[in-house]
Each structure stands twice: as C-alpha cells, then as structure tokens.
Image 1 (tube, helix red, strand yellow):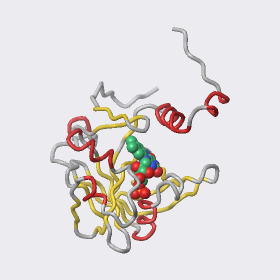
Image 2: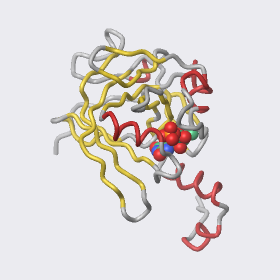
Image 3: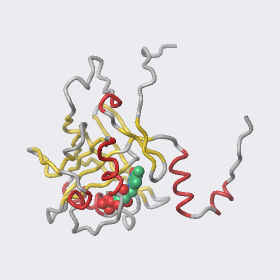
Image 4: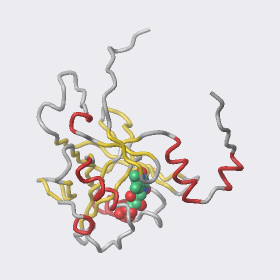
Length: 205
Ligand SMILES: Cc1cc2nc3c(=O)[nH]c(=O)nc-3n(C[C@H](O)[C@H](O)[C@H](O)COP(=O)(O)O)c2cc1C
C-alpha cells in the first residue's frame, strides 16, 4: 500500500481546528470520560476529557492532561480548590450530553443542568458523580505537573473509590468496559463503541 506523506511544515500550515482534530486523532482511539468537580462557591461542573492515562497501580494513580488555563479553566481550578474530582465513563445513551460539556460555559453555570446530566453526591466526596454513568471513580489530587512547552498540565490523582455494576470486575481483576457499553473517542468530536477482540495469557519470553 502506498502511504500519504505529511511533513512538519505541512502540519504547521494547517488551519488550527483542522490541525487540532488531526493531531488529536493521530494517537488513535482513546478513553473518554466526564470529570465531575465542584467550585468553592458550590457550583458543580462536568466536562469531557479524553487524555486519561493509568500512571501506576500501587498506589493507584490516574493522570489526565488539562489544556492551558485560559482554554479550559473550570475543572482545573475546582480540582485545585477542593483536591477532589470524579471520573465517569460515558455510554451511548448520553454521548450527546457528554459532548455538549465541552462547550465553554461561564464558571458560574451548573453544567450538569445546562447539558441535562444528573449529579449525585456520595459520603466523603464533595465532587459530584454522573448518575447516568455505570462506572464512576473518585480521585484525590496528588500532583499537578505544569508542562512548560505548551502551558498544559498533567493532573495526577489517586484512586480513592470505584463504583461499577456487580460482575463487571472479573475474577482476575479485569474490568470489561465493553460489557457496560463504555465508549471511546478520537479527534475533537468522534465517539466509538468498543468491542472486545481477544484476551491473552500473561506473555512470557
Ligand atoms: C472528545 C473531547 C475530548 C476532550 N479532551 C480534553 C482533554 O483531554 N483535556 C482538556 O483540557 N480538554 C479536553 N477537551 C475539551 C474540554 O472538554 C473543554 O475545554 C471544556 O470546556 C473544559 O471545561 P472546563 O473549563 O469546565 O474545565 C475535550 C473535548 C472533547 C469534545
């Protein structure tokens, strides 16, 4: 197969939205979830993020990339203020509402209300969970690492609590997210359903 070649000069010449879409999609299909937070003033916030990455299991750490403060201020400010946030899987039944959370609502707007999602609060966690989500977990802020090169932040949290339907966590610890219809994303606006292809035994040399 003959492949199309695109060089750095061409990438730099692209329109900014076109380039953002292409570079975002370049890495492939990614996890996508809703991050739930609350401000010091008590305004709940929910926003869609697709840069979640598992950083380690002991302690259980999850990171995500937050865009520069001017572009995406609320989630980051709320996490800094309260130290607590929730990550909630997205399913096809509310993907449109989930996508709508990427709109730039003013800080004082309750985005749950604005997009039609339901916040729920659990004991010991000031941040809201997304009731419609079948897999929800709670994080405690551990570290915010500023990335000097482009003004983004790696936000690292420890996993404090997990909620999911019974029997989804399997005997060997595997969580089959396809079985609960968790979706994934690529680019700025494309969402995928997921399907388990195959599992393997632990690979040995
Ligand atoms: C599919 C998708 C994935 C996104 N992933 C991220 C992400 O990983 N990091 C980020 O900072 N913004 C991401 N965004 C943009 C945020 O959702 C958007 O900036 C949102 O308004 C942030 O809201 P906030 O100011 O309430 O934090 C994504 C948007 C979409 C549609």
